Image 1 (spheres, rainbow, N blue to C red):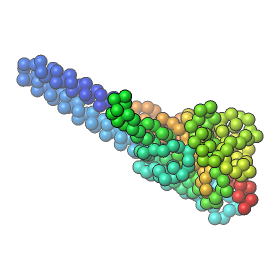
Image 2 (image 1 turned 135 degrees about the vertical axis):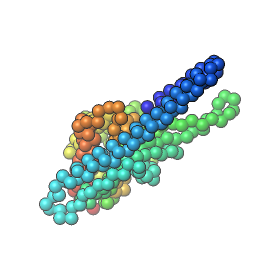
Image 3 (image 1 turned 45 degrees about the vertical axis):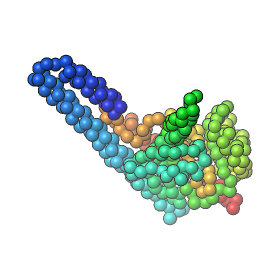
Image 4 (image 1 turned 90 degrees about the horizontal axis):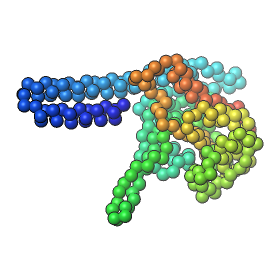
Length: 298
């Protein structure tokens, strides 16, 4: 919308200059000037109104939803120290250091993000936000001149859960593509592929690991079912890694998940979609709390 408004303003400016040049009457020129600058003011106010609406939508509605969701949690009766809370900060994002530690994306030079949520469920801390990663590349043309171009690396949501108990190996779930860059990049790091017992899961994901036995403990039938449910709902690609004490879940998408649309209906359907997205993340975290076998080998 902002881009279209700027283009319209430029075209209107060119039209104004053309008409002003061809008008001999000073009164006509004055009226055109008033119309042009009045349009600029109205357009500026419109942009300001849209930005304020988006900010308030994220802060009040989405932030309030996160708070309400956690108030409805019922703590397990056998875990008296079970804690749960969440904080929503629209202007923050997951750090670039954590994104690199996930090993799920290639190199990037620019990072932008927003709509950061962090909190705790039981002993597990979590954080997620929208992320846009880009890489600036330099290339030389046929005349020997250097040029720079911006390449998209990843755009979507990054979710990180820290279980505060280290995995012994590293396990990855990437999209099953014949020429998938993630798969070949990981193979250069000593990671090998495995096949799991669920055929549908194997069709959707390529499982890779440095520890075959642990990977099968992690990827229980219940967890694979929840990941498939999440993958089927997601509009873009999903990839996951389990490294050190953390699970990294990347969901690729081109839309802004947690902002309202100024000229669209932000009704119950939109809020239900956001609520369902949140619940799918937390269901996966809860599965790790229940699957104690992952760490019972220690």
